[in-house]
Length: 274
Image: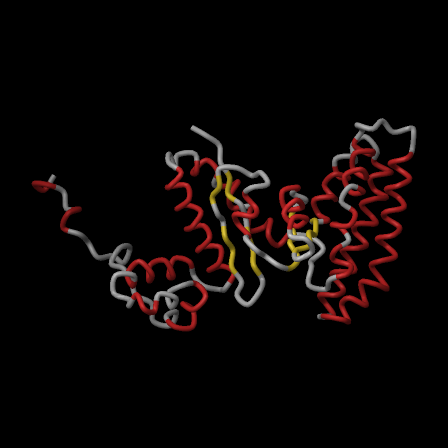
């Protein structure tokens, strides 16, 4: 048996979809295969393959790194240096509070960018100064958690600051990780896909379920309708049963299956009355 990966791709342009494409590796080659000629801001959890892809696009794509991922590095330092780790976490928490206020005030576009410039930028500058002091402090060993955490952040400074110059870029990818959590929870179920074809199919089903949940569609109702509809729906209108259009076209009167409705099958009757 070999280990493979499900990537998580979330698109927020025009139509919103979650995708869980199956790939045999997580190296630099997987990202161009998934994204093609993507243009815009690419938010990741600090994945260096994503950074390499953005660099290869010569400015057409920018890379933004998740600040929550950087925060975890400082969490690791709480046991060895609780006071210093608390200082860093307090600054990161202040940035999160700024984002909460943006959401509560429903700021968008220029107003959102101006708020980040006047309120978030000073906090971010204080955080980087703190990181520089800790990194240069000779009392901390290079491999100690309190030295590695600011080193991780400093090496990704431009990526961790992308949200300050683009109002459409979120400060973190927590909304994606909540969706991704279902994969680790179901990892044991995926152990026995046996073939790569089955694993890819599992990713497709997971993509449909996650996108249904995102769009406020009952995944069971959608899948039940689609399995019934697929044999009778015209191929010329193949886009209609997709998650993008199903809710508007079919959700009010979905096709039902006899399975699970209390209809008994003769094949299930015990033989000879036993």
